[in-house]
Image 1 (cartoon, rainbow, N blue to C red):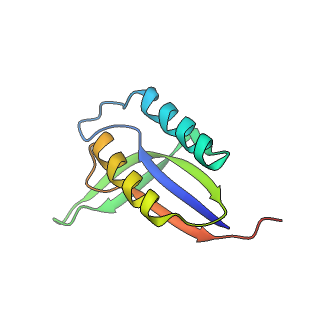
Image 2 (image 1 turned 30 degrees about the vertical axis):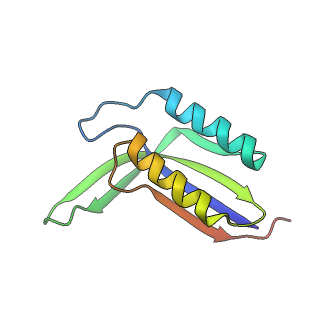
Image 3 (image 1 turned 180 degrees about the vertical axis):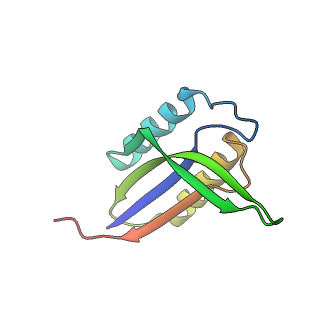
Length: 102
């Protein structure tokens, strides 16, 4: 079993919040495909990273978690690209951890 985690920005690079519909549609699609999804929307995490040109960048992100029996890598690669476009980002963090469900 795997746990897939996605970090999604709350705002674009100019500070404009993304419409909640984007998150809702994603949540519904993931729940339909995998039988459930947990979205941590109310307590955004604060991200900080090196921007590659001598400075740092800040972002508020929400976390989506999905448990799946197996990793469908092509599906996640395609979704990651779509989300990068939808959220106007260079990259979206998608991480996978093997887990044991008790």
